[in-house]
Image 1: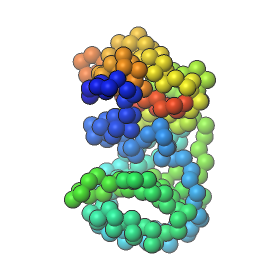
Image 2: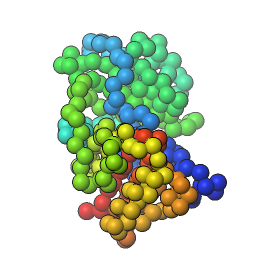
Image 3: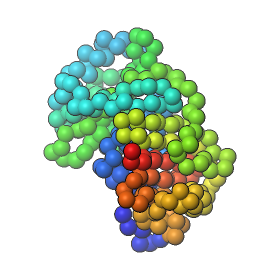
Amino acid sequence: MQPDPGGGAVNCDGMMRRLISGVIVLFFALSVQGEVFTLWPWKPSADEEVRRKLETLPGLSPEPLFTEELVLNGVELKLETYRADGDFSGLIRFLTSSFPPENLQLLGDTVRLTYLLSDGRLDRWLLIYSGDDKPVTVFRITAPAELPAPQWPSELPSLPPGATPIQVIHFPGSGGWYGSFENAPEDPAGNLRRTEAELQRDNWSAASHESSFDGNGDLYLLPGGRGVAWVCYNGTRGAFYVRRRR
């Protein structure tokens, strides 16, 4: 990853996508501009009815390709990953014709679907377009409609002054931690320098030295490949990801 030749702020969404390609546990293309678990408008539906429709999603694999255990704001959950071989535009047409708009959110190359289960939990699906002639990646997770307030963990860098956590996810399988927050000071470059100084005291090194270019995010490594960290600020919001080798 090279510094922005124009000296401008790094594109955090782009950097996160590149990181996802090497760190699959950052599954939902998590970004500081929109949390995957943030509630968006939804319409209660009988789970049997919705499940029957989803089972007919064109090209959907009958079983999850793999399952990831995670802990979201202290709640143990399970992420399932599928693939769909149907054309992405065709999948969108199927979803928009099968579900009311209250259940859907279309965001460029992603589609979010959520509905209420009979037990009061929310079933959430995310479809991610990976390119022409490639299968669509489908994620599914079932979670309580309301989650506990997040507690910021010591495994992540300190929150900026005045910031409040939005979401904390722990991945027990890989040992990774992800946290997002809001209400940080309106100085992304200064926030990055502050967080970088904290990481450097713990022997982390910046991969791109974005702080020298007034950047707002960077990737950090521990010597000998003992850990990877990702830091991104965007306005008053931000997100960290840290995984140390066991």
